[in-house]
Length: 334
Image 1 (cartoon, rainbow, N blue to C red):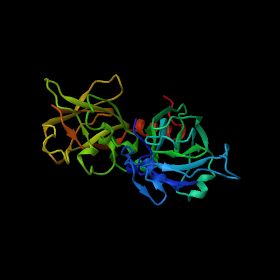
Image 2: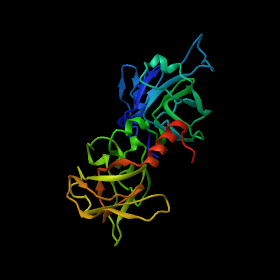
Image 3: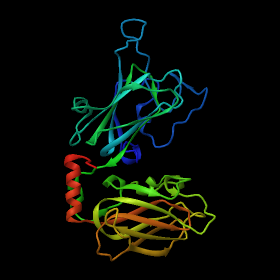
Image 4: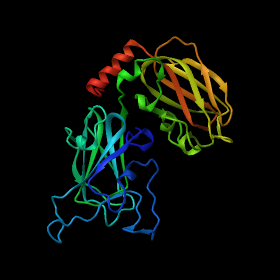
């Protein structure tokens, strides 16, 4: 599942108790943490992560009850299925235990008000290993807007990944057509044939890709098949415009692509966009006239290659809007 806390999705670190050695904003950087040995700044070795000072309250011995915290506003509020507390490169300075809490905050209050929110524990305090991506499953199916990472008593964390499915405010989707395939609107990748060079989640990201690395790219096929990706749409809807963007893919764009849709997991696939030639490094837009509701989409690329973005603009059906409101009010029930 996609990382709902990414900076590129609009995530932000709104407050932290301490960040003497390394900025907490590094927690939500999309790229993996890097390390350059023997690179020292004014406060010591430069780390690509969040690192707090050693806690020494009341004397030279560490305070076992002490805790450092960072609060992250999710770029896409939603249901959290799991978190990754990544301590890459932190070997002698990682926190021995961590916990994660989450909250729902309406509007855009200042940070000091978010601190006093009604926090719900979604990851009980538990040990983590150093220089390790520590994945932790989350059982709650409530919708959240903020998460709070607590490290005991201090130390360094490279990245915090918050994997789940977006649950948008339905009031913002009731005023005309919107992208039914956008991650920020609650769509998600459900399956794909290959993701050797790039994650298919990139197809659903907001904005234009800034490089080939921000798209989905498959390895080169040596058979007669083709690559594909399937998308659970934000809601049941009718698609009226398809955008297939091959920006940055010059010698490795697909030769052709097609799009199909279906209503429900057991529905029959029907054609939205027939197999159509594509150009490299081009933002293709196609109007379609298919008056059939769909909850899933499948894009086939022929035979392989890379795609920067896939947009499926349309309107939600009455049933789709009802499902959006249900997820907003009650989180995820399935």
